[in-house]
Image 1 (cartoon, rainbow, N blue to C red):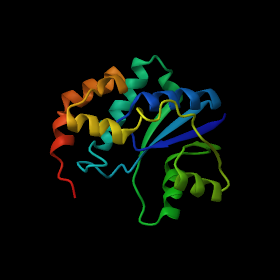
Image 2 (image 1 turned 120 degrees about the vertical axis):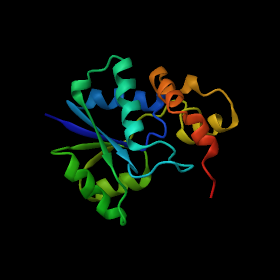
Image 3 (image 1 turned 135 degrees about the vertical axis):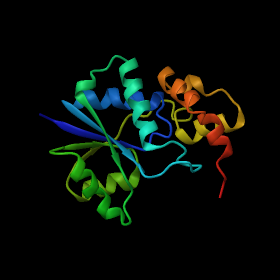
Image 4 (image 1 turned 30 degrees about the vertical axis):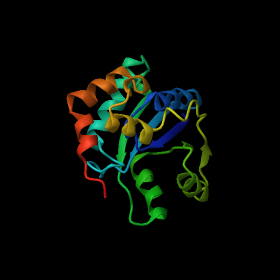
Length: 170
């Protein structure tokens, strides 16, 4: 069985992430989705909790009709030292052989451990970027078309737009 890991913060989970999940599922039999910086929330760069992000991912995958039995979502906290972070993933995910990421540091860390890293094709990266979606929320610009409907509903249910707007900027 080929096992892979898709790494991201998913702040919030958007349509680009959904495309990445589809891409990764074509390469593996079982996909772990590693929700990075899981200990962080209520910050400008990380407004949503790990639980909220996991719910966004699960609801969006279900809404898209993907096989949920092939996907496991795990929260992964940051490490004090970058090199230790991969061991956190190792503790949560067994026997993986491929990692899906476009982030340079994550790529380097897994390659140093001898794990194959495959970049995810990026489509319309200008729109499908968490930073841009959070900025749209903050400024009252349209954003719902950039996330799955289930994610938009979760953000509305938790009053996420006001959270994004009211988080103190450091």
